Image 1 (cartoon, rainbow, N blue to C red):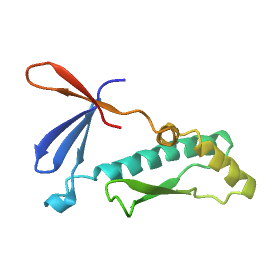
Image 2 (cartoon, helix red, strand yellow; image 1 turned 90 degrees about the vertical axis):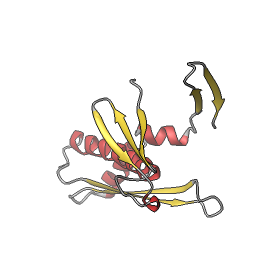
Image 3 (cartoon, rainbow, N blue to C red; image 1 turned 90 degrees about the horizontal axis):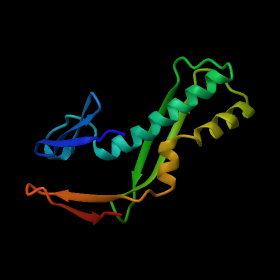
Image 4 (cartoon, rainbow, N blue to C red; image 1 turned 180 degrees about the vertical axis):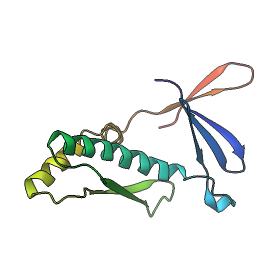
Length: 141
């Protein structure tokens, strides 16, 4: 997988370069609102992954997938406002589903790699590469 690069632009605004795509992220409390916050992107990533797997499931089972929506909301931990305590997804197909179809759709969402990655608590590390070109590793979490 190619590297994703995040480059500072101004104040709390950053450009995210993913392959040939450009996204913006910032913190609206800093006076700008050029894009979502990093936690909104986290929730959007999970919702987008769930939408992909939901659409695929609907199509494979002959259920119309047109107009499918997935809403996502997150809440912060009350003791630590720097951590997400919960993410709630609302999968909204545009057609009525039987209880069995709903359960099967719910099971299909369990295959979303963003969901499985979050549940597995991936090991995260960081390397600090200074202008002298000497990398220095540090465990982040």
